[in-house]
Length: 405
Image (cartoon, rainbow, N blue to C red; front, side, top):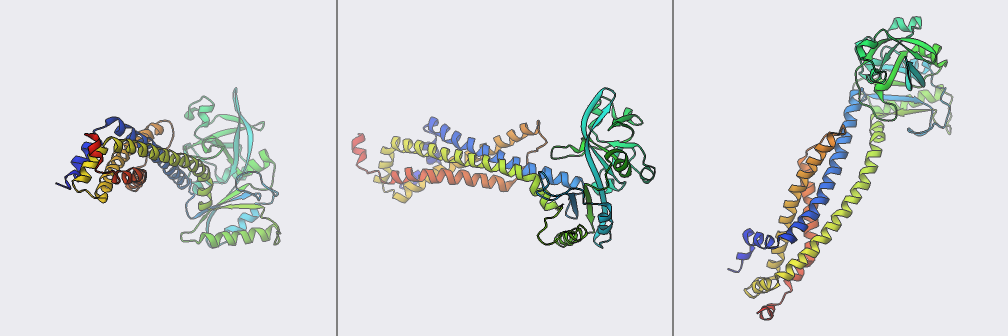
């Protein structure tokens, strides 16, 4: 008889006796948890998309990108940009752990076709560009060795460029576009590739390296080189060795800063996810603040519920319920609130992610770990902010029964 009110049936009966209070307690947590789950899912999805994109362009654990010019990875260079040469690449190719080296040069130039003109990224590349970047034509062909030898005025265009020119891709093969006042024949259209940053990969135009250097850019240095390493290469060792070679070739002494930048897979991931992490941090702070506000709402509504049920609590105490019994009763009630809120919040966050996926490349990611963490947040918030009202309930005097008669 004494412990009958501890049954879940009795707890649920009390919880649902004031549906307005219950609704607002659930609503407060559901909103916060939906926001937190959605933020986490967006961040996890963005990271997965970035990792997939890097893998898609052959930038896994056995790759490195060397960019001309020293300084920060993103932003203006702080040194000369004309010191990285093909001779440097030839030296690096002799390293026993280097499987492939693909140099490139690039500029942003005006490209026109008929009455359409636009600034685009133009790159000079070697035939091994396709292997280095896992990027192949879906129409026509790629740059070949003969193109390099004869300085051929041909080009391969990105997948989005036909749309910019308002012409089907198949109709552009064999047509000529104007780059820097010279005409180039389109010999191939590349497959679509995901990209990050200001210059989309699918909006680039690739020329034979020799043609680009002599006929278009008029320069004798390169802007970067993609390296692929043999399987099992120690990236840190490779990074140190390459830095040592380039500094020696560029005659850089101890205090002189590097006039090149080495981008490893880990660094690439950190660069691409830095903005996402920053945004997620601020959103998570907002979510946590929202969770605290939810907790305060739950606390006040729990106080109101206990005030309303004070005579019943007094009766339970009079019948022999201990303070621990009363405390357990209300903490179990708070756990039920957390469980309901956690499930509903999770479902709503997945629905919200599905809606977001219709307008962005981000896809909803389900994880039991995330669900359990979400429920843990809900349970912690509900229990912590229900604790004071529950303690207050344990101090209700049985004499209150006389006043309620």
